[in-house]
Length: 392
Ligand code: FSX
Ligand code: SF4
Ligand code: F3S
View 1 (cartoon, rainbow, N blue to C red):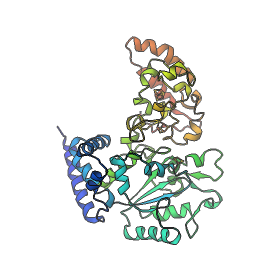
View 2: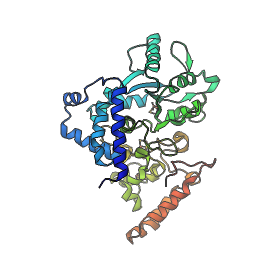
View 3: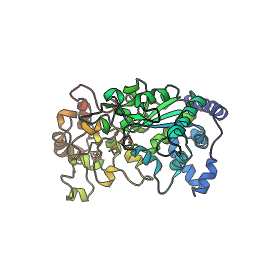
View 4: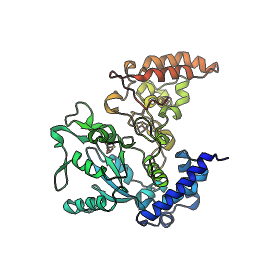
């Protein structure tokens, strides 16, 4: 049974899609023809539609709307700005040896401006940017990759033929955008460019420009979290519900640790103690060699990367917390547990789990008590802020 709420939402979605099809430019690509050309069968496409609908936390009646949004994906004008970063986010978004539906969607995206891949350069590129702002005010989505250096009055970063600073370009483009999406942890919080000692005084977009952004966290993020968020925007004309750090809840609502395949070993107190030991061979939990999955909100175990093939913990290394604020500094050292003063976690907690919790688990008592003590105790960095989105 589908409740009244969802039926109303479906009606709103249909109205939005009708408007979207009228008001936005015609699709650049025939998406269904492209799927066929790339060898994606009808069955695989339907499987993807079901997956994406569920991932967006919508009931199955929305499947036709997800399909319709995918078919209209290439109508949405997108401006993609690059600031201080490694271009890994764009790489993740461009590379795919075996294109799946998400990759094909991204292939059709209407990139009006993207410095790495556009053919135009200099004044010509600048004109593409100006044209988009002029032709689609209030309609285009601005995607920002990279942090904004504020040092020397922003002069650590000057871009384009006019030598504008990151702040100047950011303000110009975001002020006329329908929404601004930060792709990658650099754009959100400053990421690696802002790691100590941060000589360029790099910060996230929201802080530098004083605007709210939708944050697709990760270094780099999973492209599915990006495509899903854009599909949602096309369907509803608004961004999906966000957590306290601007991350879509559908993608960042749970901790890596909550659905990691090594979790039964954590609960049983079975840990890799050093690289290459028996525990490593047996696929035991990586907490003691530094996994930050318990402090990290992301859907990596569920989505995986590279056409769902693998993800860091599956590949044998702990999560380094790349979807969290300031991870480069706050999650270090990467191959050791964080000192318990930082998050209220640490080896003592794990050892306690190793000895006490195993007994409790065997006795059929859920691990819940110790784990929630660990979660509730994880608050607090010295400045009193919390890591994660406070969703527990
Ligand atoms: Fe790199 Fe993107 Fe990391 Fe940053 O990624 S993968 S340093 S999040 O901005 O290019
Ligand atoms: Fe998985 Fe890391 Fe949690 Fe262990 S600590 S269960 S490896 S997420
Ligand atoms: Fe990043 Fe951890 Fe996922 S390091 S990619 S959030 S498993």
